[in-house]
Length: 306
Image (cartoon, rainbow, N blue to C red; front, side, top):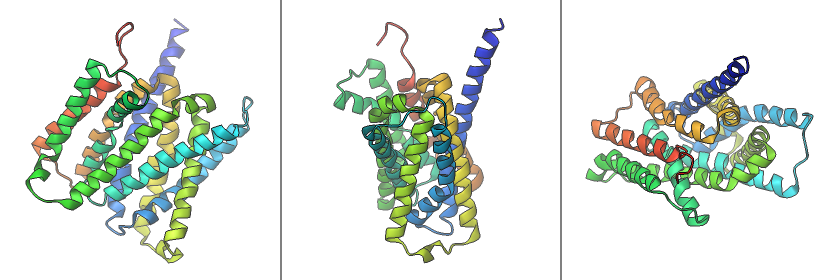
């Protein structure tokens, strides 16, 4: 009895952290779209986000180094962490920022959430893993749902829409590649240290990109832009990154992936509340199919089943 209660509390806390992390991450497209009302420069806006979130990750890196069980990373491990950080938190984020200039926050989050199905395809193509019948059904549901979501845009030529969708989907591909390649290194170096080091590397790259491409005068922005950038850095970058890292340790990747299905739904809800975004009934039905497909592909098979 006494042993079960702490274990249950441990798992409940993990579930709460996962839900909180997903909700906080879902605010990011909202902050981006709100900031775009004042400035539509993704290079500057992404740089502000990383400048304000970098102190949190530097602090975490120092905290981990002071731990009793800390061991220095080998050169290859450090290079792998930095490379994966650049792929996921720099390349994927930059593509997301670019794409959200052209599509709604809700649709952008839906496209980002395609990464579990892309992981299945990459694992089959690159690692030779067999695609199960359930995974094939999930893929059919997911991409069928996307066809419904995009159906209204097939009626007219909306080049910017398709450009935005392609950019955000490219970000989802980057994140999927990061997951496929990064599982072993994350397990070896620890989730908190990995997050801190990877985000620090990505932050440095984003800030360097800004300094190379923009003059310092580009930082002369309206006060609301800085408010949205700080909110994005704290509420939808630093806090959820560590919440998800701890949730992964407590409840595992499969459970976190399933809870991640809340992401597109909450972003669409926030879009309705804060941005007056609207999706048609056909697009909502397609969104539902995408969510069902992603949940299906994220569930762990029962023991002894493929």
